Length: 285
Image 1 (tube, rainbow, N blue to C red):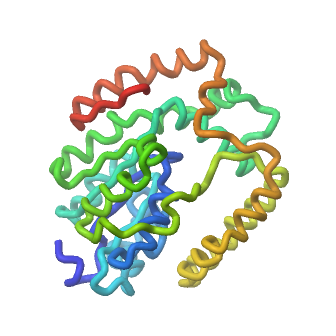
Image 2 (image 1 turned 60 degrees about the vertical axis):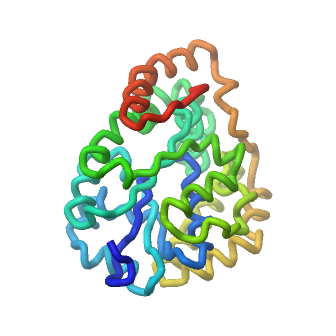
């Protein structure tokens, strides 16, 4: 695929959820050779959007010019229809998937739901787990990635471990730049910053207002303005003031022993499938 010939995506990030895709997207957005006009388009996974057709989808990239265009939508990885839908139009596209310890990911999902008001603050993780099967399903990476490895060659798929972005962010983002065949020496300003950290807001409404403002600016074609505002640090300061509790990346260590063992047992067979599928080891999961 030649990104210069037409305004079509050169790459698509498929997730997973709560696996550092917001930070990754920020680093891609800043690269001068990459055009990432909007995150979370959800075209291939939402029937209402998919029914509008590929031309509608490609309109998101109409101003990308010669840059390598792409997007990240975290709903793609777990939808079994997505791989075939992408391959039907873009058989040579590059696919990026970021995976996280599924136990940690499940806990982060819970805290994200607390932040959005989807789960009440009084509900414990164990209680929420009973009513939110997606906490487990989203971590079954072997199951979800299988259709992508059937639809595309291995050389078209980049699998990354979220944990590596914490220990060596420079190498992590460099590997993506190399995969996309852009200048891998570029260092984005977001490289050492945290994006979308797990936290519990004091007032959920304030957080939701920020989401609405972000969505409005992006839909109005002002994505660049929103990112400039984010880079200023003002939203972070306001959200910090609205934080009643912040969660670290090792929150799963606080889980009840039996809960952690239960989750690990569920993910064990899928982890084997994932390793077999990708040829990558996932230590300490």
